[in-house]
Image: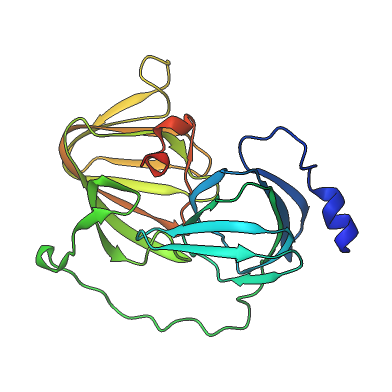
Amino acid sequence: MTTELLQQAAPSKRAAIEEPLRRTLLENDEVLVVATTYPPGASVPIHTHRFPNVSYVIDGGTIETRDADGTVEVYDIQPGETLWSAAAHAHSARNLGSSFVRIVEVELKRAKHGEEAPESHAIVLTTEDLDWKPDPLDPRRRSAMLVGNPTMCGPFTTRVAAPAGYIIGLHMHPDEDEQLTVLSGVIRWSTGEPGSGEPEYTLGAGGFALAPAGTPHRIAILDDAVIQLSGVGPRNYIYMNPAEDPRRKP
């Protein structure tokens, strides 16, 4: 793919765009190629890439990234620069400059083929072993990792503790199933907003819900609760109402 083709694939700087614009240029079993335009001040909420990727800078500028743990980095990227990023590195990105930034990312789907599988071993935890911390996605709740990490490739199991009245707004995980088990307290799990006509379920300790990939679902905490979430990372979130995305809040 030539530089001329890459430039043609990205929209004009004169376009009136308020949010970053992403266009899939090519996808097959080997690669995913995406062109992204960042208008001045535009940002992308925290997210992960499922595969290692190479980025080519068409129009440079100043980009700020923020990791899931709050670490902030600022980069001055130049036209023609090529950047490498490992898979499953959770981060947000924001254009700090006054001009448009345009990049093309090539995700290498088979990059991990040929690597040795990590050695398996038994994991046994007591309640005293759990390391509860403010959740990096929303500090109003706490979380404890049991196995793996939702921001990394591979299976994970995590526990989330939240007070009565806390709500995880209607959202979905586009590529991953989510298994939820209520360990204590009471929650209301639904596939739509209250009063929308979509099914709503009240679940106490021992209750279970499965949200297949791409299924919108909402979780309301009715009584202080601990829930256990399992799936295969990296976990991506898409909120039906972006205003309910805690990653967008200061």
